[in-house]
Amino acid sequence: MKLLVIGQGLAGTIVALQALRHYGHVTCVDSGSHEIASLAAAGILNPITGPRLNLTWNVHTLMPAAKAFYTEWEGILQTSFFCERTIRRIFRSENETTYHAKRYKNEAVHEFLSCVQPSPPLPYNARSNLGECSINAAVLNIAQFLEASRAWLLKHASLMQTTFRYDELKVTTDGLHWQGNRFDHVIFCEGFGVANNPWFAHLPFKPAKGESLEVELAHPLPPEILSAEKWILPQGGCRALTGSTYEWVDLTSTCTPTAREELLSGLGKMLPENPVIAVHSQRAGVRPCSHNTRPYVGTHPDNPRLSILNGLGSKGTLMAPWCAEQLIKHLTNDTPLHPEMDVRRMKQSPFSG
Ligand SMILES: Cc1cc2nc3c(=O)[nH]c(=O)nc-3n(C[C@H](O)[C@H](O)[C@H](O)COP(=O)(O)OP(=O)(O)OC[C@H]3O[C@@H](n4cnc5c(N)ncnc54)[C@H](O)[C@@H]3O)c2cc1C
Image (tube, rainbow, N blue to C red; front, top):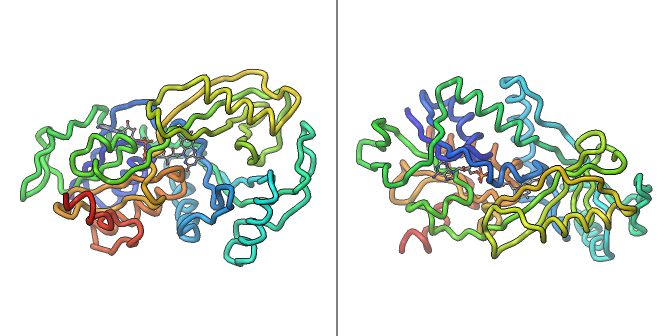
């Protein structure tokens, strides 16, 4: 079996690594752009998100699958890029404490969410009178994971750096033909680049640009992730990442002064007393959000040789390992896909034209 994977962001990398186990041959094609969602992301695997503290869809399956995948590949790639981390979620309003109380009644959340605790002072004396809770999360250093995977794919002659042109793919009854090679399946993992894909471009996406900063703080922070106005992910010493913004009109990957101001002002509210000494870098990318927060996984209704893994939104680190595994099983053993993520759920609108 020969597989072609388009894109080497989080989705394409994870699907290519998993597929190398089941397919004799995988070719992953990536344009090599650095202005992609995966490189703007913090890499937080957060099971409970949003002002309403919502439990992530299917998280009891997604989290163990993600932990198993990243720790196994840390061993294979002999690189450290994954760790479990606590999020200190500091309440900003009575509304959030009300939602916490509501969510906490469900015992299924206790694996991830603590009860309300008093908020101890931070190094900068910022604290909330409303208290806080802890969330059991994890962090993937995405840049390191992608770089180590890239080297491994190159070593296994499974990566080509070029921009894939859709008109070069010939779809025939005996297979797919591209640049003189025949493939059994193609899996498209172009993130927001899916907008150029003639087979899947009409899926209803709600793309959201986001920006993040890497900063030098005046004082070191404890290792926990802080979440209040914005999130702060300590990187060791006085370095920290902070994010992120949401923007639905400007869908470029250009960093903006407005986002920088928003993020610095968020830091100022969380850590008063002029906490930032320097901004080391600013990154922007477009999150490939689906219309209903469920990913798009599976095969095209008119041609089962064409597949997609996309729509990971703001949860690529958590969703991609399990979704990729399910897609590979579907292609190799015809195992049914979860109906809420199966891309064929959309057949009524985009595919029927
Ligand atoms: C500011 C910000 C913060 C975020 N924080 C988090 C977080 O903490 N945790 C989390 O889980 N998620 C987070 N996300 C979301 C996360 O980034 C996405 O879910 C994930 O990266 C999507 O990965 P992807 O592979 O689908 O897309 P991308 O990362 O965009 O990768 C797509 C790849 O396909 C390639 N490509 C596209 N078209 C072609 C073509 N024609 N030929 C060749 N190559 C092509 C691109 O070059 C790219 O390498 C964040 C996003 C942003 C913007």
